[in-house]
Length: 220
Image (tube, rainbow, N blue to C red; front, side, top):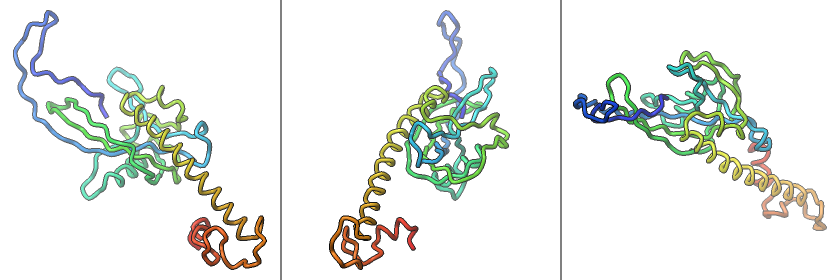
């Protein structure tokens, strides 16, 4: 997305004197969606990476940002985020949760545009990095700990910091679930338990296999 450009009602010379008002620009509202797609979430935070895209601006600078694009007719914002991430990075993903939205103004082709971008946290499910999209100059897996330095736009750096907190919560919930399941398995198979009734889960009291174990085993 282009960097926000200041919009003024009149042009001024270096001395500050008015040179006359510019024609009023037509206001257009646009909505896009994209996301932060993260590698294997089972690994520690400092080993995780996110797929970023790089575009070259008019000055020849590489501008690193999150993949995103317009919401097409009939799409939800989540569907757009998944599609745009795949198209711009080559990485397939599934939405975990919403990170937030960014809105800003800029001028393009004689229009004053108010853009809103919905961002999501995605889990990588497959694919390979690809810069096949004609709008993308480069793609890269960037360690999450380096995002504040690599991302060009401050709003996206803020989203990256929010993602760190979300991932920490998800990791804590995962670890808690793993501990619970291990406890259920141990209790069911008689470790630490003297009761001879092995047909019920000693954690929840349901007949074996209990819902927790079925969920762990993929619903089987």
